[in-house]
Image 1 (cartoon, rainbow, N blue to C red):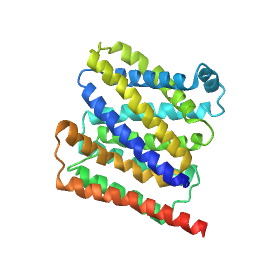
Image 2 (image 1 turned 90 degrees about the vertical axis):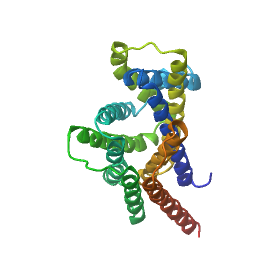
Image 3 (image 1 turned 30 degrees about the horizontal axis):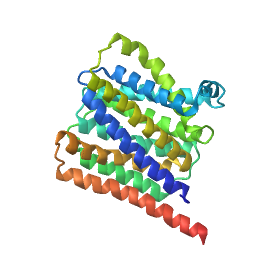
Image 4 (image 1 turned 135 degrees about the vertical axis):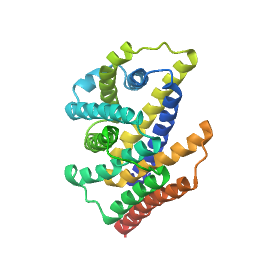
Length: 290
């Protein structure tokens, strides 16, 4: 594809579609299998895929990576973000935790201006704001008050956004599968103890789903990492909101959840945010070629 930003957008949308599918599989598993065990199996599957792709030299390349330290920091932030998100989800309604978590693209855009020195145009800010409004409309959180779970959900959003900014910084200096290997090694180390302590022997069907979480999440990580190599954080941030649309679609197809009118209105806002970015970047590309 000639335009790297368009390629980055396409990969990012695909990544968040896969992450939503991953969350749907986790929802099928979490009633019987502890989250720690799911994350452990998922990371083991992804790491095995990295070894299949790279071969025995993967371990040496990981050790010698010039950006091993920031990748480790990023991975630890994401583990804390996941833990915070799932802890908050136990006490908050889905609409509430979703709305709070989707503060991440806003935080990510702000951090991109500070850490990465990205020049965020008015169009990009408008897209981020429009997308967040769409999330609020679609999720319709009513009566949300400040509490410890609310803090955890916001903490998850901030840590995820920080992780995405670090990903953009490291993506330009290291191959995606090396970064994936580092991330999942950290996840394995940090989840292994809890996974063993709370171990539940899975059935054959659950084993298939556990393997599926690794395959789906691995493909999603690869798409996201490659997308971050192609485009700035402030361009890609609004497209994180598209995962909400995929969530409503999968909820309807798998569990028969029927979206309400506010869901469709919110989805229209989210799609408009994405279209604003796409049209803006295409116009900039045409001007640059004149």
